[in-house]
Length: 336
Image (cartoon, rainbow, N blue to C red; front, side):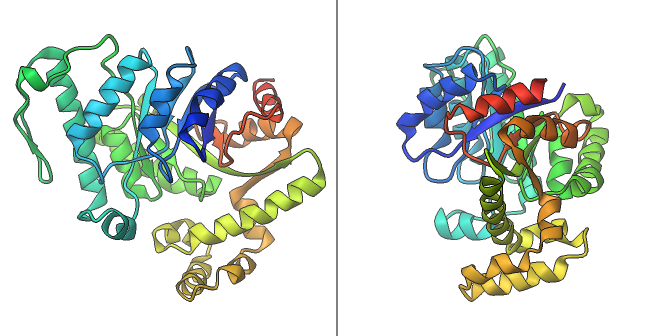
């Protein structure tokens, strides 16, 4: 059954516990936090203190700025604190950020992400069973875990791992080793069906699993409001967001499937020139409608459900959850 989630982008981590409780009260299935200005794991740790049933997840935490062992420790502790509600979403980021914002080494993202997930699982097995750690990959080699450094077994040792994917390659990784696929908001239903699902199914075939073994979690650009005026203003904000993301060549394949590869190049050129105010003009209404779901707060839940039924297992707005009462209309309309 399709689930509806909430995602936050807080200005202050101390807001996370209150918003998580609100999301749980409003009937959302999972409370996702991202990694932009604050550590997502700290936010989730705070959220465990005010919630009891809602899932708690990262959408996403950066995989390549941390070692698999560091990720394993943090996830293990959060799984214990939340009593089994953690959903660990991992993303690769792009080369420029890994190298220039974090000062880390960039390596082939697909194969490396696969190893991160596999290495974490081997560490968790060692902690849960006491068996010797022995992981020998191309990017990570792990063979030391003495009892002094092992946190030991926990009640809920199976931690779902979601892999963020824009292109088919990461879809394959999610299908091969993941429990879920995080779909970037810069997608269309056609791209999701024809490209990401194809990669996901190929990965599932490699691992001997079926579609039911992996959850597809979709973040959606939305223009939502109480009036048509608010919806129009939200459309224009989304136009700018689409232009911003589409200026990055990583997302070119999303554009190319619709014949918009040239738009991607023009947007990239404008971004390099620093002409950010000109970029929205490259995104016409026809293009915007492919990326956007719109409606009033009373309508948007049902529209989302119908648009993504059969394509996804979880949906959430690419709009920070702020606890306003309007969000109740989303969940009630979604479940109607």
